[in-house]
Length: 136
Image (cartoon, rainbow, N blue to C red; front, side, top):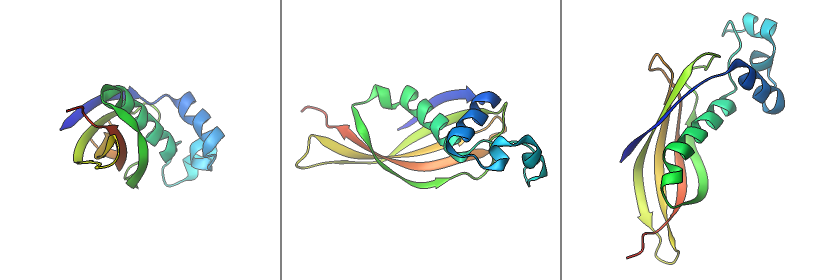
């Protein structure tokens, strides 16, 4: 199963505020330093990109299932930078599901992909979830 989880516009103020609080590297918070970097301008923290991706996944999929919570993330990658003004779109694909024999939940593996308005992948990761089993 694949789900389109919607899109979000990246707001500069929100992007910079997040970086100031959680990832204050110069390319995320200092305009002059960012211009001198390999990126040539401010870019979003990868963690900000992950947070936006998570929000879209929650709103577009996880709130619609019997999600108990996450058990981790594998293979998190940021192959291209995110800039203010970009529009990110998120898709999620269920790639594996295993019922637990002794627990009321199963284990679900999901592949997340966030792309920008140019169809460039800006984030990919595998989400590992606990989901309540269906009643039989």
